[in-house]
Image 1 (cartoon, helix red, strand yellow):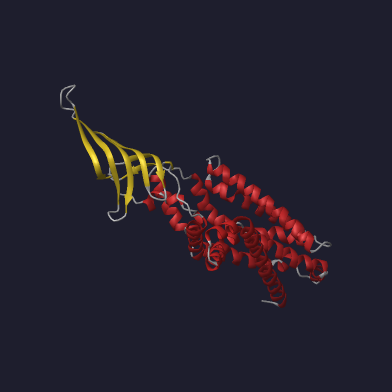
Image 2: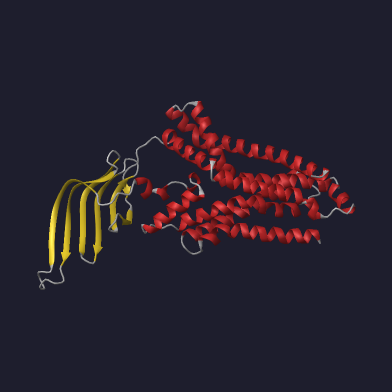
Length: 369
């Protein structure tokens, strides 16, 4: 690294650390006052648990809500903007140092951050998110969920069973008014039960108070006698499928609590059971596009920073907020369209990032001209 590289890298890293710390502390303060204070007082949550919650939730803020990318944007605008204001950029350009050479450190710095973010999100980040979710449910939401609209699953067991539950309690893993059926070339199986629940000791779904109807067709038998019907009364019996709640409700867990490999596995399993997975695939591709924003945002920050002559801090924050809001709005719209199937998941996840990259490269080339 040359003297210029070390100078810019040191200033950029220091400014980024300060900016990111300010964003995290501001978020904690606002969330604590507006969303957590009443729960802390109501449930007498210990201070240690509150600290654990915010420590576990910090990566979600930094990565999912793009606090790191926004902090990098602000830092780049501040550092290079100050260099432009102090005519350091002008002196370098006059000395024969090209803009590409000046921008090398911010670009490589952002690229390293993108790689680090991706690696962290799919290792420790997933564990942090799961821990935050656990603390949220255990301490900040102490209630028993009422039975709501139940799930429907297909492709269960070894006979392609379909299960519909009218009312289901996801906390207790119990349901009411169950309808299970399977159709084959040889006939039909139908199960109706009043209640279903998960028995962890037996690792099985248990049916209570119902009936099991089997119909078998014999093509060789005379017409009218080719169907054999059998009805079995159910008092308490294991359901004909063995999929665990973790498998059946895998997509109900937040994508942030899973690595890329785990999310891919759950999505494939959900598709095999006929469950809608469009929003899940958008989240899967977002795991790649979200870290890339750190690298993309720098290409926009550099041309903006070179135009800052007055205003300094206020101009930097104003430009950062405007760019951040534009990205969020674009991403929310494209991700929403992807979740309802109007855009392919890959395009929905990468659209906003791609637009920003194209705009950044265009502005950067114009700044070099």
